[in-house]
Amino acid sequence: MRTGLIFDIQRYAIHDGPGIRMTIFFKGCPLSCAWCHNPESQSPRVQKMYSANKCIGSQDCVRACPNEALTLTPHGIVTDMEACQLCGECVRVCPTKAMEFSGHEETLEGLMQQIEREIVFFDQSGGGVTFSGGEPLMHYQFLIPLLKACGEKGIHRAVDTSGFTKTKVLLEVARHTDLFLFDLKLMDPVRHKAWTGVRNEKILHNLKVLAETGVPIQIRIPLIKGVNCDEENIRETAGFIAGLPGEKRVVSLLPYHDLAIKKHERLGQTYRFGQLERPSENELRQIEKVFEENGIRAVLRA
Ligand code: SF4
Ligand code: SF4
Image (tube, rainbow, N blue to C red; front, side, top):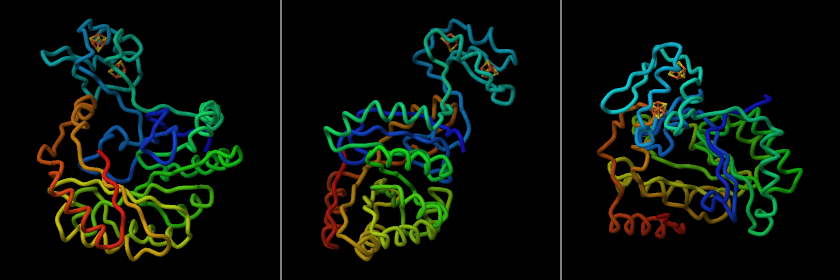
C-alpha cells in the first residue's frame, strides 16, 4: 500500500515508549471504546472538525460551501452531514482554522523524511518512533514496510495496539517491532463488547502468542470507574498478566480523564458517557496493591 491515513504526528512524545519519540497516529480502529480520548481516531475516513471557540462567525464557510451544507446558529456553524461532500472548501476559506479536516494521506517516503529529521533526538535520548492510532495494525500493509525502513536506519520502533487483529498479522509485525504497547481493557468478553464494540477472546489469545515470541511488551490498562475498576476484573486481569510466558511485567495504569468531550463536540458527536469517572486515589492504591500481590509492578500515569 502506497499511503496511510494519519490523523496526527506528535514530536517530542515522552509517554509512548522509551526516550524522546515521534508518535504517528493512524486513523481507523475496529474498536469503539466509550472512553476513547481520540474519538477522531475511530473512523477510517477523513472527517471534518469544527471548533466553536475559534469561530468568529465570518460565514466565509457558509458562502463557500457548494452544497449549502452549513448554517450559522446561535451555537456556531452546524454542518448538515448528509449534504456535506467533504470537498474541503470551508476548511480552505476559514480564516481562523475553526474548520479542519482530521486525517490526511502520507506516503512512506514522506513519513520517513519526517522521522529521519528526529534521529538526533532519538539518539540522544534512547527514543524512537511509535506507531499508534486508532489501530496501526489495521494498516499493516503500509505499516510493515514503514517498520522495515525504520529498522534499516537503526530507529527504535514501538507499536501501540489493541491486539484486535489476525494473529498472523501481529506475528509478522512483531518481526519488525522492538516494543509493543498492548492495551488490556476488560477480561469478561460480554462486558468488553458492551464497552468497546468487540469481544476480547482474540485480544487475549494474541497477547499470549505475542508474549511467547519474547518481544518486549508493555501492557497498558485504562482505568475507568464503572467500567473496569471492580475488584473481580482487576484480580482477573492481574492473574492473566502474571500467567503470561516470559519476563516479569511492568504494567502502566492510565486513569480516565474527560478531555475527549471537547473532541466529540468538534466532530459534531454527542458524548454519551458522561457517567464515566476517574477512580479515586484510594481506589487507585487498591488496584496497584492487587497487581503487586501478583508480582507485577504497576506504574501509575497521571
Ligand atoms: S466540506 Fe465542502 S461540502 Fe462539506 S461543509 Fe465544507 S464546503 Fe460544504
Ligand atoms: S469561516 Fe471559519 S471563522 Fe468564519 S464562520 Fe466559518 S468556521 Fe467560523
